[in-house]
Length: 152
Length: 115
Image 1: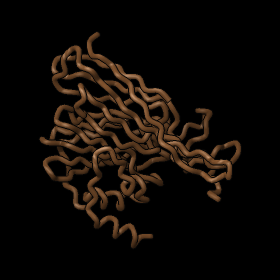
Image 2: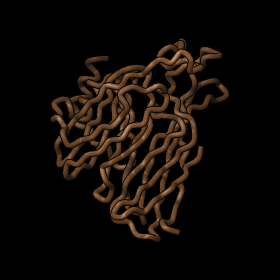
Image 3: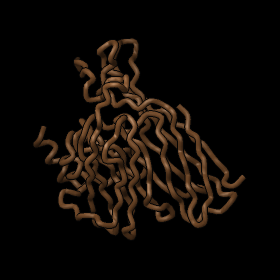
Image 4: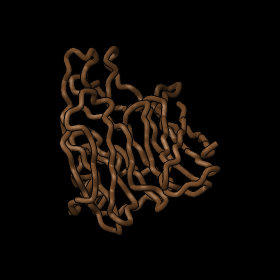
């Protein structure tokens, strides 16, 4: 498997409009996903805001905002490094849209959230740690404590 | 599954809120009662258009929240502009032979700005 992913990562994949980027979403690790995004050597992004709470109570609904003030921002990808499928969403942004997008994500536990931004043909990446607090009084079982099913 | 659009015309920016009702299951999570995997069912794509022009093409995975709310900010829209959101949801179903297969469901929703 690692060899197959390495081969995939080397192949430049540019998804056509309307086509769901399957290789990206199926990437089993953030490293593999960054390879698909050609972001393995991404630049730091001081002009990118990745706004998310440092500590969240409900990992099923985490509010995230990504804003880029880099000129010619045309793509924003959100990843959660510790998830089984790290790629959460990819937004292709037209010049008529502010690169400022808010959505809600699921986090199964404490980990690193990452935004990869393509602007002017360059790839930038920012990360932020998010702690998922376990609230024993909250009633429902935290995602991290839920039993895994036998996939058979 | 339904999509609702709300829009607020601010000075130079129009806030477009897209509310997507429905589950978000990536097929990896077990039902706590039965212990079986919950079938794949999530919003896979959103296309937000204004008067036929594409504002954003969002590719989405099962890692987003159920009943999600998205907020986009569009530049220089005028009252009367038509905002369209086209959505695609991917759903796993089991045939008579018990084999799973995924199918795409699509739909669209329209809002005319400032009316």
